[in-house]
Image (cartoon, rainbow, N blue to C red; front, side):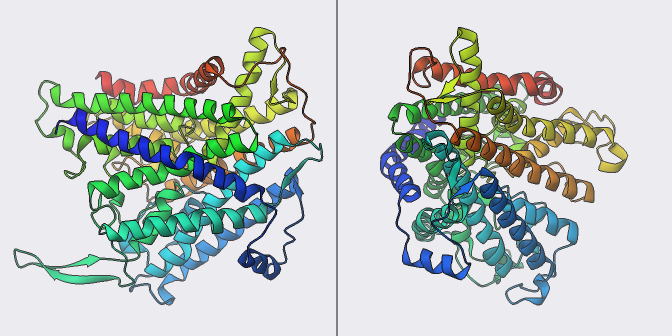
Length: 561
């Protein structure tokens, strides 16, 4: 089968499955967050932690609860890693060094799953299952909660400013959405050969007589929430390129579907909650357009590598698994960088300069195509509000979004939300390159794989883009174990996660205190082909104008060279 046909079949299978789940799962998630009934286990939990499930919070209360919840998660995960060597299930592994423990705790609580360590050598099964996997559920639930809070702010008609109850939203997201889907997906993975064991490893003798040890663990359960929660952190260093995590082409396609499933279906949830199907379909159309463009760019340049004069016949397969090939590797790469997942089934650093630049730019778009669990929806809704403001001014119409006026305060908060990520990426990269004696970014070597080269700069830019967007993937040629990278990337993850959340919830609060106005011909419609084009152009222009100089110094220069 040629690569074009293989790519078409794989992409078609993803589209078909997502299409089958789009309506039922999207409507189910809407019912989860609008239902007035609590499950018995939920009521027990509320009593145990002394939470009033009927209480409603303004954006200040909602934000305070979210930040406190996340802070406790960081502290717990940090302590768990530090005392790992004294706990059962460590497999003889000692406690994690302080800088690495801080980076990892922040990474998993922020849904980034950046891993500056070799998982099978550093983390024990108890730390993985009781700490990292738990945060995979909770961080994804937080993202869902913020997206739902923003929707409530948009549709609020009372003017009370209430956004719901953070604790109820997180509990429902975890127990009613993430846990059931993860259980189903984990069973599917185990049936296909993904390892699920509480042993730390087993000895074996190779065909050449050499003895070795294979690492095993609770991989299938971690893999399920890793993909469904758009987390991305693997239990093995090679992530989803390892046959213990991703053994067959079927599991590979299933993983791609899993990481796209909730973000895509959330557009249906949005349209159901705002009672206008056109709104969700417009957002979905923008996501699909951007995803298709990035996939076309990355795949075409990766395939074209084999036709370059002087390129070895197998060069384009460097860093890729033979059982997946180029189409499945590129599809996975675009999906994982477009959803803030960061899982990999191939080495992004081995992609051609143009393809590597494409997956980098996929993150720099803000990861809204379709984005992470919850984060993609609230990210693109903030951009949608900016687009309607700009579009309204251009054509002389009142800037309103679903009956809510977009004034100075609203647009200021929305702008601050989207400016955080570019500032973190560019400032972090600039400091790292400038302070070479501190950070290890040295010289200006002609070797494209060394830190001081054009490609070395791209590796640094990719690292801060990944951390600030809470993605977690990396160009593997960059060593990030120094205290500088552990700390600076950890700070980028924290600020890149929580500052946009604070501004998004503030925006939701500003919208929630307004009473909606009846639609009129004086307002710019937020659906249809015209608005789809406007929103798409806004997203591309924001990333293009912000990051083009940096991209020109990195992947564009390398591709032209």
